[in-house]
Length: 316
Image 1 (spheres, rainbow, N blue to C red):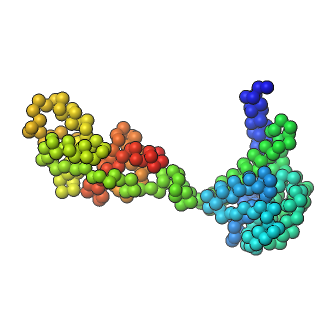
Image 2: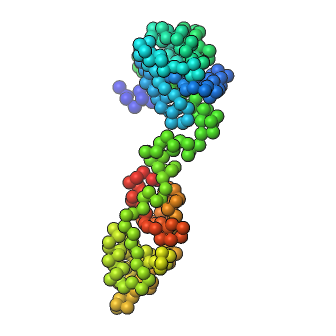
């Protein structure tokens, strides 16, 4: 048995079914999107079996992209959970056969309790298809499993159609990356879109005055844990001294007793205001191949932000 060949065949079958789905999309899809978008309530997604898992994923995608949605399991609905549906809601019911007993039993209630019933089914002539105001046809010619039985191609098509709904609804709602970040504040996506430099500034704030001795500079650089100190005059940044600057100075100077901070500092260091996005700080760090960046507050020295700290926090 050639497992690699089997895997490629399965993917080819699913790709072909997705192409078929794309080619048969019509005004029914447009009506479904417009109905969901126009609803004053939320979208209730109903399913059972493998379609229930697909439905949960669709709900998760919609909620994170600006369309309020809730999943309703068909087996639980008839035992009290139907109360989640309000008249202003739209229902999207997913069933490939469209004739699952649990789904069929629910159809009168799904129609009566909601403003619109959308059926996602591979059988438009099924009971679900006939009861629905709008049909999203997810027919597949064959499943990808060797026995052509296990839901594979059919669930892939359902999932992809759910993504297409979400994408179109995002466009209608003018849903932008900053809106996306509002629903993902704890993840790296949200951090990259909203986190400010101020959140990641080091607790240590190394600095010396321009007249500081080499001993004072070494103590400041060593204490900072970043291998850098900032030369300031009343909060104004004059330059920076890194451990690399110190090593080069020691190699080039026979007598360091008279050397002071301003003699070896690097002028005009890269800096960023604390109110800027952390991802902008990461861009400056990467673009200039440096490990630390000076943070300012209205032009005054505020602190240090470190490349590794940003990486650890998922800023890219």
